[in-house]
Image (cartoon, rainbow, N blue to C red):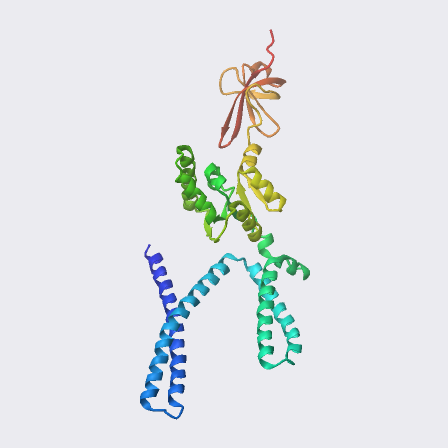
Length: 358
């Protein structure tokens, strides 16, 4: 706790130094400008010079504070954006920016023949426009750019197994906590702030059943945060109206797997070639293949622990315990399933002979 508090104080101190540094720069520049204005001219005097320096410093103090806070907001926003953007995407943006500046250098040559004021204004505009356009195109099409030179971004091919994006339905369902506890899901789980808002809204609902579901989702989230095998990373995005679309876009951009129980959302993600881990589909794959009343054929190989039992094994290694079948050991018999037990070591099927001899 003390480490977190000291880290917060250190960040606040760094922000304060940034604002004061910009303010000091403005004070120095405007005080120097005031000195030049007060020391030149026909009516120059020591009092006029000091007054000009004081006014310049005062204006620099006020304007420097405003500029410092604006600079701090810009730097903080840029830092947040860089932290959310994958490294390959940043590299693609840098490549796009360099290409844009090169194109701007070519377009600058004919502009030099224009009048100086118009030429430099047009040059600055072209450089800023092409650099911004190049960064946006490069960060969006970074996979294609690296593909042109035979390179594959690591984030697009290597991190799919340990990077996941979770949606609201998966948290409310709760089975994702079991997947994490058993090790089927590990690594980093990206939690979009829109999902957090949805959970909070459901938890505050006036409907008791809906409120219970929302609180269950929050409890599952707390359980995931306590797990040592996963790391929850909050992704903040301002102005998002469609949370499902934001989740699909996030999984696609970060190269992660979308965890959901929403069948429609899963279809949308699959249509956009985003890997999806459907909890319901996973559960159906691991459902018990036999139920009470099913008839199966098994070869009995030994006696059971209880009197009269015969034991056989299916092709997948499942043990079948057949009641009153010790006389049929060594033969293939048809049995009817009476019960199925799932244990930590596997499944056990209890059955009775389908046809009993007279």
